[in-house]
Length: 106
Image 1 (spheres, rainbow, N blue to C red):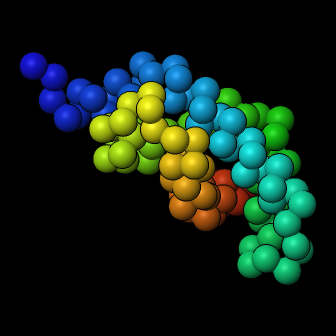
Image 2 (tube, rainbow, N blue to C red; image 1 turned 90 degrees about the horizontal axis):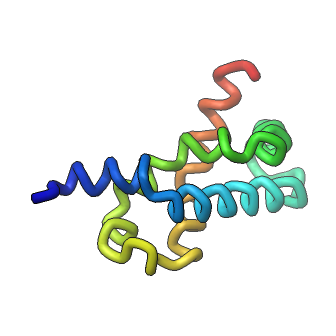
């Protein structure tokens, strides 16, 4: 019998549908940052991440995958989870991902 942790792991590493949809969400976020108002808090750092993410989307998606794989709605709904839910998880994780990106001195 598979455990919750088994399901989390499978979502993170074996669910190509989730990786594909997450990557689209990350690119959408990067594109949005590229056109956002420069007055948005932390815009300069967000823009650095967005420019990098647009050309490195498969790698840029990695930091979001655990948040997605652990989300109760993603776990329960599996491939039926909405794109809006995936976008919401990516958006919620974005500030921490940008901060980690900037701290690594890209």
